[in-house]
Image (cartoon, rainbow over all chains, first blue to last red; front, side, top):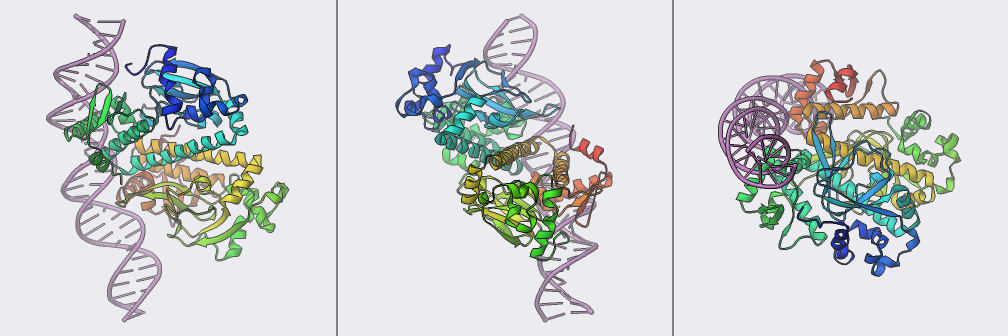
Length: 255
Length: 255
DNA sequence: CGGGCAATTGAAATACATCAAGGCGTGTGG
DNA sequence: CCACACGCCTTGATGTATTTCAATTGCCCG
């Protein structure tokens, strides 16, 4: 994977700019850098070290599951590098992706409290995770009002994103759904400082877009071709450029 | 409305059986009966009375909005009687219903913490509500671990319902969506002791079903006709009977 | 070199939307 | 009391967005 450095030092390199540049990063929010003394800086280090839960790190290769539906993991992962997808699969194989996890994201917060998972999390690229034990995480949240509030904000965001998804799937056509998905990813990457010249890493396969928008991969291919032909976006070599933001927002019915 | 008694005494009558018969009722969970001395019984009365937030009651006629999108109400309503729908509307009029509120339900919990609402709540039948101030409710939750846990369970349920909705809208056809909606309502009414002989009050218009399933009212009419013709369900006079549970579960792709 | 995943493209099928007309029940104003 | 409008449901005819099927290509990887 082009966007992933080879070994564990890679984690630190990718994260080196994190507490400074990343505006919106769950790992920073929850103070997990501190577990790595090399990355503890500024106000991050000032939060009570005693409150820190133990973490553990690992890398999952692309296309592998990180957690499986109906599992009961006792940890919750944070994504340090790479992209992942949360999805559920029906008995006959139909699949719906509920959310994408980008670098800096925490997995769905229901993992902290729920007994059995209602979704799988699958690595799209190679994914470097840092995980926290649920019990430890819960007790940190209970003892630290600030972290608790951050956690609640994330829960609210999840809820509102889930509602948005339902509206998009129920009441928007294919063009709108796909354009909105791409813009959502664009904006989240931008918040994290991962967009340069309107261009960002875009590792999704068309079947990921299909499963996220409730369409088929064939139709996604046709719509994307049309988007490219009209000059709104350009996709090449796993990266996407937003060529005509105004036009694309119009397609996405934004504003 | 057949299922609504005339005046305020009606509230008490409808609720008289509540803490005893209703297995799954947010109003009971949060101890709001206690505000009415006549209905405080058993362990309900045993919870610290000091922790009780003040409530206020009112009735909203059918088809009226209870709260409007983008409003910032400082209260959260509980539904004592009647049905309501939470929905969002796009600029061009397309509408998606995100959830139905049945007797005993609390409105979406985001109302407690969010600043601006992302949905409207509309009375389907005449609705009798009991509302609680958000600030008072929050402080009760913070002081009472038991209530806090109940609140969290409701949040989790909301989240998992929102995900279910996305899956249904993204990956299931019209028959499945409609059957699943009806079964979901059936089961929730049953939990509340409001199903008798497989029959329950069903005040939804076909356009409600359409807006909840992402279909048009015309198509809903055709699908429902087919369901009736095949003998799975019977609908008459605002009430619905589940004639063939096994067959209907099969249509809904359950189990 | 073969084999599997990914993307593209065209033709045919289909699920659902849209359009249109009619019926039925209910409230309302003359 | 009737006329009329209006909301709600039904049904058929037609239109269309998206799926399904199929064939082809490129590409990466072993």
